[in-house]
Image (tube, rainbow, N blue to C red):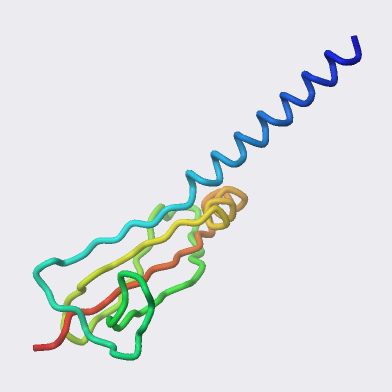
Length: 119
């Protein structure tokens, strides 16, 4: 009888662990919007081995505080050329957790963007 109780507890803890992993993996994502018609602002010193190689990247990593009545926020950055080549918005598990704990009043924002090359 005690073996069966121990086995059930083992399965329940395993199921809880799998659910936590699934939730944490599904809450980590990024969205990148790219302007295929434009030319990115160059940065020859950027030797990263990803999409941003050779491009001048601007990063905004901040925490936004919202009031109770506000449901959205505006974070406006300007490029000297007047346009964006790419914008990437990243959501992490820590950001989702912060938003859940504060009932949406605080949100962690990480944005990477590349401006268009000036003509």
